[in-house]
Image 1 (cartoon, rainbow, N blue to C red):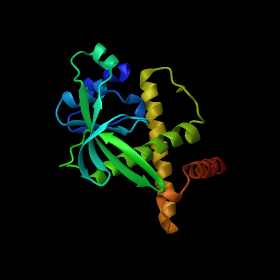
Image 2: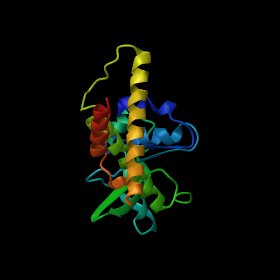
Image 3: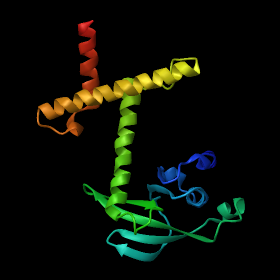
Length: 198
């Protein structure tokens, strides 16, 4: 959280920052709202969260009030005793999920908030595909110079998008959804074809 706080100055205006539940911190989240113009945040609800429902906006959409911890107030005496966040609860299959956000209810529906958070997982799956399938879980990049690191990253991203494009075209050709095509399988198939062609 302290490291994340050092990045809040650089967040763009008119943005939503998607965070993991490990970044649940009144000080951090309130600072995102306070700086710049129209900056918001979104993160999953922490387990065993203590709160009071202040207002209900509809089914699965409410405003919560939570107490700021004594430790947080000791670190930052300017923090209030209580702070508020909007909570949106939705279903994914048979599972119920709740996310907290600063997005205002008059501009963003509960469905839009839930959809935005769900998109985050699509991004996470993309990162997983790059790290595990393409990079073989290698922790570091091979390049030693900054400009070559950028080149290597661009190459990885270009390769990822080309594989996704080919998988999507194959899916459409066979009347399937692109999400049904395994990235790992597509990557292995294309890599094998390239080796055979060589």
